[in-house]
Image (tube, rainbow, N blue to C red; front, side):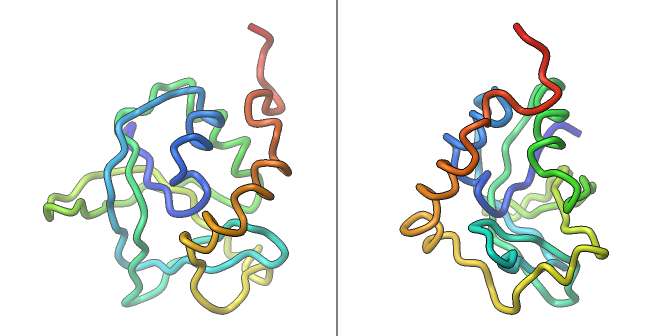
Length: 143
């Protein structure tokens, strides 16, 4: 699988391309059986399994192999990459990878729904300032 379902900061194509060093087609998608919550003290969310839940996000199609180790490092220890099946707006289902908040880190989540539009208005600028190292993630080899 090469598709990546995103539901937080990586829904911003400029952030995703800086992190992954790839520009891939992006389509709206949703994931059933999960919920997205704010992470305490952070601008980004965590996603956890939740019966009856649905997370609206986006699907990046056909990410190249070198993007995955960069995404893994960017997401860090709080998240694990997991295979899921997402629904596209036309009803088709697609297999994808996504990053799920690890159960042992759940105490770091805040009750409530994380708001992407609010992130765009008030959190994105701060987020990108804090994560200026997108293009030089630890573990990268010099070009």
